Image 1 (spheres, rainbow, N blue to C red):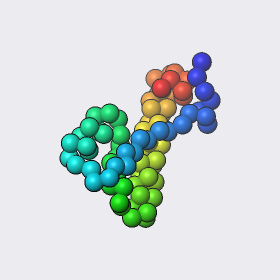
Image 2: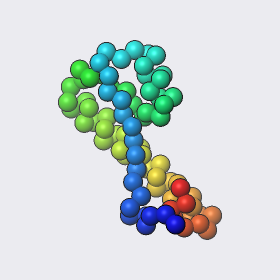
Image 3: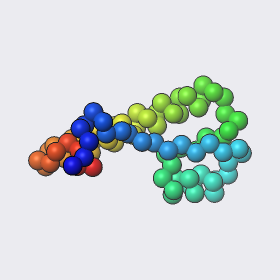
Image 4: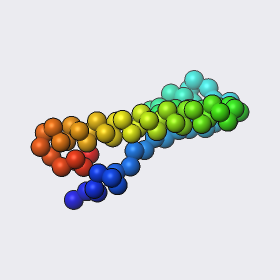
Length: 78
């Protein structure tokens, strides 16, 4: 039946890799990651990118729930 809207989680996968290459980035994105971060990146950059990824994932989840409502389905049709 699905979960109540308050219990549907937004998920974002971020890959952290030591000295990533372009091929690493392409592979991560093809596998579903939303970002690839160098393991040596400063902590403030990691935090900023995690926040951005969560915001994007939350917006996508909300858009999908709104689309369900617009077509007359329960808000958890995703």
